[in-house]
Length: 381
Image: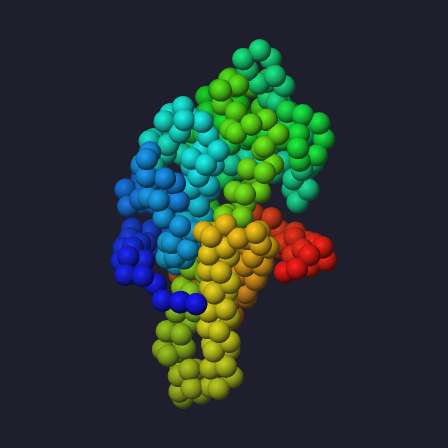
């Protein structure tokens, strides 16, 4: 095993770190406070190749691997987890089109998605089907050369602000084999959006319901084959789980750094609080847990890069562990700040609010345990 980064990885890691600290970190609090979707900044990130990280180079992708993406999302999230997480979603949509789309679909969408001239969203969750994704009810009924979509999707990142929606809809019978993936463009008659949700965190990206009311979409917008939608969704979620784990790493690392600096500066009982062994032990545990989480995320990313048969389990393990542990690190960092950690002049509270949802999305951490346990009880880990 070689845990050293390559020279190329170190170069783009430092490039992304500089971008994140210069073009994201100074503005993240305002984006959060104002609910600003920073499209111009996202397009600056795209100019660095961050909108198609693991898309092929043929249509403008960067052609990197999943470990590379984990490095990138950790750096971006050390500045703003909310904005980094939206970029992960856009990358997922682009990857789905690049991997499962037709040549015409790739030519039509990817050259505009790579510079983020158009933005992507992913529509799986519904008001009545969250963890039980295979029970989704949004329908797509064939009518000549079109599908007619009816139904509602919930908690859609980018809803009302993005341009292309990958929609999981039922074209067949009950269960996962009746689900297909369909591309729906903004402005399609019958496509509408609910109000922007008021959220605890992730405020630099809009979240809405997405509704289809006799929404007619060309059959040519089918992604892959009929009945392949659930497979496409699950493969996308494997990568999404690695990415959201990496986003948790970035947020936790930033808060660990802030806590360490605060401990050196804050004096109580006549000396810096960094002199107190109980707090030293707390900091040591935070650093150890962060390193362990990073190693699990990297292992899962490597499993995806090498197409290992156990990749799904490794992704579930990494997502469960990293998001739980990193949220705990941020909570400890807030505690080490005392009352200062609870006010908005200090960024720790924003990271706490942003990282909380990572334990819910891309499959709740309870569902991650279901995936892991199922494998444990039906085969070898």
